[in-house]
Amino acid sequence: MPARPPTFLRPLRLAGLVSAVVALLAAFITVQTGSAGAATGNVLRDDTGLYPRAIRLAHNGSANGRILSSVVTFSGNNGLGAIYESTDSGTSFHQVGTVGDPEAANGQGLCCSTLFELPQQVGSLPAGTLLWAASVGQDEANRRMALRVFKSSDVGRTWSYLSTIATAGSTGGLWEPEFSVDSSGHLVAHYSDETDPAHSQKLMAARSSNGQTWTGHHATVISSLATDRPGMAVVRKLGNGTYFMSYEICSASGQYQCVVHYRTSPDGWDWSGGAALGYRPETSDGKYFKHAPTVAWAPQAGNPLGRLFLIGQVLYNKDGSVAAGSGRTVWVNSSGGSGTWREIAAPVTVESKVVDYCPNYSSALLPSADGNSLLEIATDWAGSTCKPYFATTAVPAT
Image 1 (tube, rainbow, N blue to C red):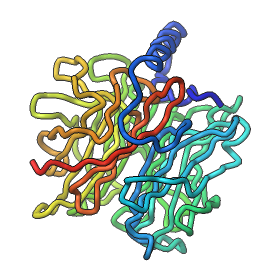
Image 2 (cartoon, rainbow, N blue to C red):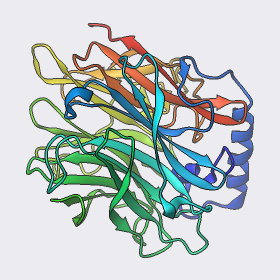
Image 3 (cartoon, rainbow, N blue to C red):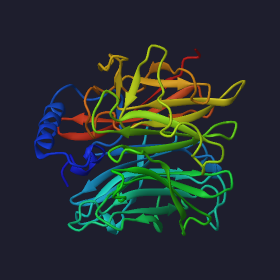
């Protein structure tokens, strides 16, 4: 498998793109890989490591406080999930496990995995069970992609197949699974769906009472414009019980193509309230993020909402120009996402000025338990290899 799997350009696959545009994009990416130096921070994996995720264990007894992270990597033409652990609050990591899905072997394709710790029992799965899920099958000739879930009961050392969230009924894609637990105690899977012929892409959710059977598949963000592409949802629960979802909406053209949006839900299942497509987060001077957002939550003393941390791949000024802080900035908000967002320095700095599946693409953010420091895992080119880098920094009080 090459270090630049073409499936990671998936968010850009708008219906009807002509070959000339694809060729231009490919040329642009080739220039990008050989440009600026690699990111700051420490190398998590000295090899290909894509789509990083990070969690802090809180329901695993003596292992609580450990940080686990995951990246997508490849051994030959086999897609793998590499699992890393830190026992020193993110100062160092070492690999402790590997997820090997046979449906991602032999060139079938693997993309965009996630990592999750169950905060409570779901069916027979006890609190503390680790879940890993990913998109598989995108590189098959007559593809029928699936979102497959694996579980671990030994803190990430070994993994076994658990269930399939959804399987495509056509060659359209199913991408970017993420988990949450709704207010009724159901495990919820959020994902991007390209299989509806009436919509280039829409955001979907399904839920399970046992982690094995998935029901209630329904759209959570869907546009009246067939060319719009809501995608890359990440959901976090605020201190007051409200659920917050960040995502991108890619469109055919315009200044706000793939701009980051958010919306909220009172129960983590019904996302129908508020504006039809959600809201665009901005700073006080009108900056905005585009592409591949992720969000994290941490408690904040004296604030029942807690604090949100948001990042996107590229940061733009109000006039549509790339901001000087792009690839170097994380946003903070203490009002549940409403109002303006405050800029702080990102723990890892990346030269991130163009759209590419590597630099600063879907970076992982993990605040400390008290919210006073922030770990980031971000990817960047090191020559022709996309590697993950990590670092931690203090969060400014104001």
